[in-house]
Structure formats: C-alpha cells, structure tokens
Amino acid sequence: DQQVKQNSPSLSVQEGRISILNCDYTNSMFDYFLWYKKYPAEGPTFLISISSIKDKNEDGRFTVFLNKSAKHLSLHIVPSQPGDSAVYFCAAHRPGTYKYIFGTGTRLKVLA
Amino acid sequence: EADIYQTPRYLVIGTGKKITLECSQTMGHDKMYWYQQDPGMELHLIHYSYGVNSTEKGDLSSESTVSRIRTEHFPLTLESARPSHTSQYLCASSFGGLQETQYFGPGTRLLVL
Image (cartoon, rainbow over all chains, first blue to last red; front, side):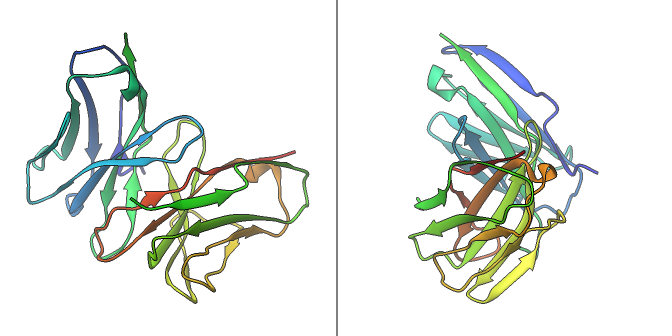
C-alpha cells in the first residue's frame, strides 16, 4: 500500500512558465516533507522541505505548499528553466523514526 | 551539503558471485541508509544505521547485509548475487534529529546476469 503517491509520472512545461508537481499522502501523522530532484545516473539532491506545522515554504524559485486537510503537497517552480528537467520525488517523514517514505517520482521536462 | 561517495557506479556480474557495494561519507554524519530503487518506482529503505556497530533492517526485505565499523563507511554485501537483485542501490546519510534531511550518493546500478 503506497503511502506517498505522485500520480503524474511526467509533466512538460514551457521555459519561463510555472511547473507544479503534486504529491498526496495517506498518513496524517507524517510530520515533515522533503522534495528531491534526481538527474539520470545521479543520486537524489535535496531541494526544499516543509514542516507539518507550516503551509508554505519558499526558497528562490521553489515553493512548497502543504494542505494538511487534503493530505496534499505541491512543489511550484517559477520560472521553469531547462536545467530543471529531472525526476522529482517527494518524501514524507514517519514520526518517531529516522525514516522517510518516498513517492514514485514525476519526470519534469522543461521545453526551451 | 554532504559529500557521499559510492563505488562502483555500475556493476555487471554473474549469478552466484559475492559483491560488496561501497558507501563512504566525509561529513561525520551519524546515520546512514541504503535504499533500493527500480525504474519508475519509489525508493525503498533496505538497511539503516544509527551509528557505529548499529544496523537495522529497513522496510523492504533484502538478502543483503551491511556493517558499520567506522562512522564514515557503510558497505552493503550480497553473498550470492541473483538476477532478482538487479536494481539501483542508493546510499544516504544524515546528522542530528529525527527529521533531518538525508543526503544521497550517486548510486550503484547493479545488473546480475
């Protein structure tokens, strides 16, 4: 049973426009969330995080929104750049542990 | 940002061989992790360690074993490789509290023929 879901396997966006990547989770006890970016043949690179006590966190072009009632978070990238083309994973922290549960990823392609 | 290294990056090996995947980090992180990822799938935690001489099984059952004799080193061993072990293996580390970000190495792509 998948506790963290990224229902869109891929997304294409024009350069300069906004990219919105979505992530849904089933366990309301998750207390911290991470977004990672992964290029081919490389390991995931940390992008941005958000605590369950917040509903928004911003870092440059990247903003993560958390809607706890809907158990939904989203990553906004604006403006999108061709270098943002990668697979994006969301991860949810299981309270009381050092463990994160990962989604299956969304492949973003930013078209020049 | 953590410096974490994995070798080899790619490995093609025959069934029945013993293999060790190396993972080292230079940041002094106390916690280290091994994940397995198949294409298009989520990362699954197979082993983790809270510190030297501490290792635990992860959420996904794995025939591999790990050791943590030094803080910076967390090797993963398969005693007898099988085609079902073909996957990408990602090592990560973190430091501090429960919610700390995990930093990943570049991964090892394993193909067992």
